[in-house]
Image (tube, rainbow, N blue to C red; front, side, top):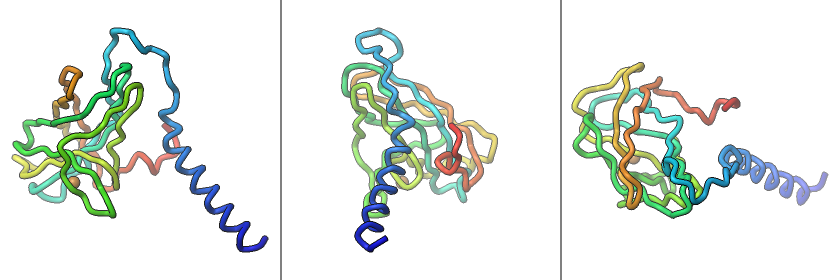
Length: 161
Ligand code: CU
């Protein structure tokens, strides 16, 4: 195998990995136009925070409607300052909103986009549940409970879904 083939193979492999990750979500249920719940949330969790200064929140938000929407704000009894963060070049920064494409999803995951709770009113422990309310540009607000998990918890490391 020459070097060129190896590189092509490596590129193909990383592409496959990327497809595998997004593949979980590629099933489109042709429900466009129905009046069912437009927004559904799955896998919501918070890794047990190290201290009461900040905590991260992760989940997958699906937009079952045929209309593009945006996540514009998050509120929670845990913090008066819940922010929406994106990660660029391994640095996170606050953004005013995040796109939620029509029939698509917004994946909040470790190392990527996430919710950030600043100045916690208490320090959650594994097993606790944190209530948040997600606000959208168009859809009605959605209440979600985040399970507090071990600090190292990362669903993407698990092969089963
Ligand atoms: Cu952050």
